[in-house]
Image (cartoon, rainbow, N blue to C red):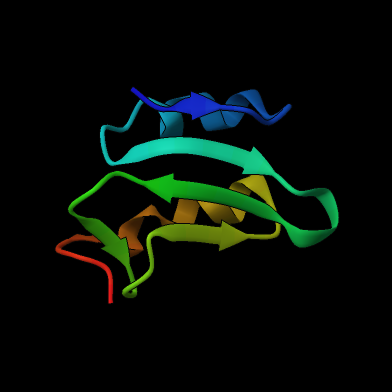
Length: 68
């Protein structure tokens, strides 16, 4: 189970996804989610969006496989 280090409780459900390690908010640089080993999002080891809602919708970009 991942960790939600943001103030957004709506991201708790995303943090419970076994593909997510950690979610954090960098304020002016948006919200980030680190993916577990063996998963990627468009080749990256992280998801990045500007709002909690966008991050929740971006989980469909996660696929199984290494980062590149």
